[in-house]
Length: 74
Image 1 (cartoon, rainbow, N blue to C red):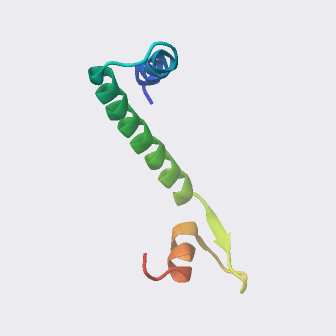
Image 2: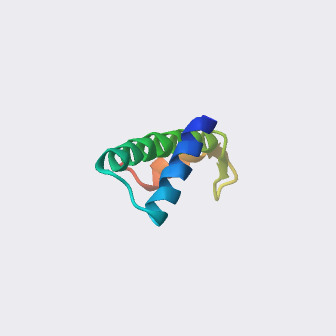
C-alpha cells in the first residue's frame, strides 16, 4: 500500500474533524477510501489462500474450499 495514499487519507480525515471538507475533498476522500478498501480486501483474500482447515474426519483442506462446502450458494 502506498504511503502517500495513507498520508492523504489521514490528512483528509483530520481536516474533516477540524474544519470540514470541500465538495472536491469529499469526493477525493471517497475515491481514496474505495482504493484503500480494495487493497485491504485483496490482502485479506491472499491471506485466506494460505489458511487451511482441518475437517472433522482429519483431512486438511484450503479454507476457501471448506467454506464453499458449508455454503454452497457462494
